[in-house]
Length: 77
Image (cartoon, rainbow, N blue to C red):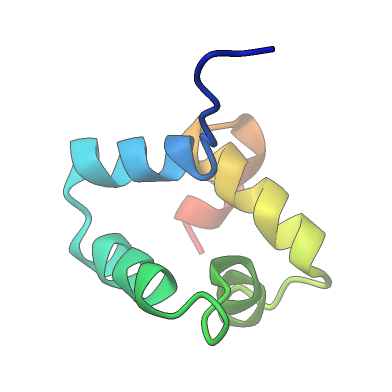
Protein backbone atom coordinates (compact mmCIF):
# COMPACT_ATOMS: atom_id res chain seq x y z
CA UNK A 1 0.00 0.00 0.00
CA UNK A 2 1.44 3.40 -0.99
CA UNK A 3 2.19 5.95 1.68
CA UNK A 4 1.26 8.87 -0.58
CA UNK A 5 -1.35 8.82 -3.32
CA UNK A 6 -0.98 11.62 -5.89
CA UNK A 7 -3.17 12.41 -8.87
CA UNK A 8 -1.02 13.99 -11.59
CA UNK A 9 -4.03 14.86 -13.74
CA UNK A 10 -3.16 17.54 -16.29
CA UNK A 11 0.42 17.79 -15.04
CA UNK A 12 1.81 18.24 -18.58
CA UNK A 13 -0.70 21.00 -19.38
CA UNK A 14 -0.08 22.84 -16.09
CA UNK A 15 3.69 22.61 -16.60
CA UNK A 16 3.35 23.91 -20.15
CA UNK A 17 1.22 26.85 -18.98
CA UNK A 18 3.64 27.69 -16.19
CA UNK A 19 6.72 27.61 -18.41
CA UNK A 20 5.14 29.38 -21.39
CA UNK A 21 3.06 31.89 -19.39
CA UNK A 22 0.41 31.53 -22.11
CA UNK A 23 -2.24 34.01 -20.92
CA UNK A 24 -5.10 32.43 -22.93
CA UNK A 25 -4.21 28.94 -21.74
CA UNK A 26 -3.94 30.09 -18.13
CA UNK A 27 -7.35 31.77 -18.37
CA UNK A 28 -8.86 28.57 -19.83
CA UNK A 29 -7.29 26.52 -17.05
CA UNK A 30 -8.70 28.84 -14.39
CA UNK A 31 -12.15 28.28 -15.94
CA UNK A 32 -11.65 24.52 -15.63
CA UNK A 33 -10.47 24.74 -12.02
CA UNK A 34 -13.25 27.13 -10.99
CA UNK A 35 -16.04 24.95 -12.41
CA UNK A 36 -14.99 21.70 -14.13
CA UNK A 37 -18.61 20.72 -14.73
CA UNK A 38 -19.15 23.73 -17.01
CA UNK A 39 -15.86 23.82 -18.93
CA UNK A 40 -14.09 20.95 -20.71
CA UNK A 41 -10.88 22.08 -22.38
CA UNK A 42 -10.94 19.17 -24.84
CA UNK A 43 -14.50 19.91 -25.97
CA UNK A 44 -13.56 23.56 -26.29
CA UNK A 45 -10.56 22.68 -28.50
CA UNK A 46 -12.73 20.31 -30.53
CA UNK A 47 -15.04 23.21 -31.33
CA UNK A 48 -12.31 25.82 -31.91
CA UNK A 49 -10.25 23.61 -34.24
CA UNK A 50 -13.26 21.91 -35.86
CA UNK A 51 -12.04 18.44 -34.88
CA UNK A 52 -14.31 15.40 -35.29
CA UNK A 53 -14.16 14.14 -31.67
CA UNK A 54 -13.13 14.98 -28.13
CA UNK A 55 -10.52 12.20 -28.21
CA UNK A 56 -8.85 13.70 -31.28
CA UNK A 57 -8.89 17.10 -29.56
CA UNK A 58 -7.19 15.52 -26.53
CA UNK A 59 -4.52 13.87 -28.69
CA UNK A 60 -4.06 17.16 -30.56
CA UNK A 61 -3.35 18.98 -27.29
CA UNK A 62 -0.67 16.47 -26.24
CA UNK A 63 0.94 16.56 -29.67
CA UNK A 64 0.89 20.36 -29.56
CA UNK A 65 2.61 20.38 -26.16
CA UNK A 66 5.33 17.98 -27.34
CA UNK A 67 5.59 19.64 -30.78
CA UNK A 68 4.79 16.60 -32.84
CA UNK A 69 5.32 16.80 -36.63
CA UNK A 70 1.57 16.26 -36.97
CA UNK A 71 0.84 19.63 -35.36
CA UNK A 72 3.28 21.59 -37.51
CA UNK A 73 0.58 21.57 -40.19
CA UNK A 74 -1.71 23.62 -37.95
CA UNK A 75 0.90 26.30 -37.21
CA UNK A 76 0.60 27.72 -40.72
CA UNK A 77 -3.18 27.57 -41.04
